[in-house]
Image 1: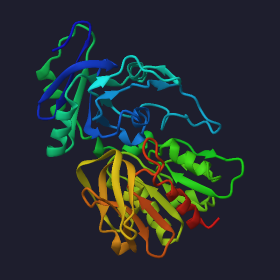
Image 2 (image 1 turned 30 degrees about the vertical axis):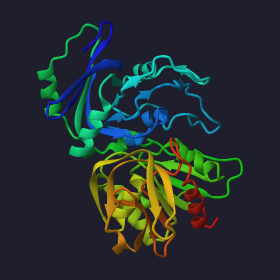
Image 3 (image 1 turned 60 degrees about the horizontal axis):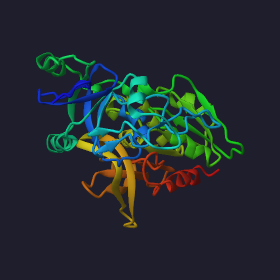
Image 4 (image 1 turned 90 degrees about the horizontal axis):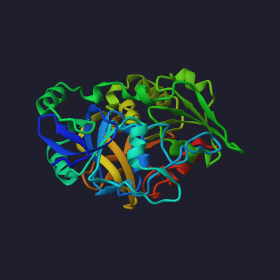
Length: 377
């Protein structure tokens, strides 16, 4: 039931099933890939601004979101926003059970509702996010529609069904080009001891911060930079970033990584970067049924049997990379999918999860140190 003085809102699946709730944020109709995130009540600001969510409608499984509000767009000494993973919200739509209207935190300057309105992103609350998550787990992620209306408007269900039936799968788009930097950006710490170039497919700011905190001169280049263009910076190592979409779409990045492998260039990849490197090694990628998204995903080191709790955000995975000289060293405990690869005799490693911990546990930040060792600086 829509209550008086509340914005009507509809979340619809591609087959026409729908959930009726209350809207917040922007009043508009959008479509996207409907996915769920098992993050706790914390981390929603980082989730909203993560470029890997470009083109997606995100369902949060935690029952209350927005309880500590939204901080200001404050920047650090390098010009990176302190509390967000990019300079704008990247999700297409936001789905929660309850949106907190009276947050409490000393750094909060606005509510989650205000934040989404400011960024022109629609949200819906007071719907059964548990039921939606169960559908996505059993049937797989799918295209969805989110419609938020102004007060007193009446949703036209048949019209919405027509829209969602024709909606495009965002994964066929070159999503990385939509979120990548358009120009070269350089970040220099006070006492640099080496240089890394980041091939930006949608890099999160905390990845950049992790390099800078280790006194690594960091250069971010657009997604379509070639091997030759990147090597003009004389990097000690190259980082292939996280990002949205199907890795097979990014043929330029795959070809560039093949050259890094052939020329023994130290290389590190995270998330989409892991998939790109795996494909460059001759492997194949495939889509997971409902992906891994959240801050409580357990991976195990095959050699040491040590487990790590990790933050993850991906819908695709890679396999059959062994013929390219790589071996798996980390795997997902839940479904045995790949979580990390390392070359047998070259200075290259990659992981499928997010060791930069924004949001999420810090169990795996040591991987940045391992990469720096491979750079031999």
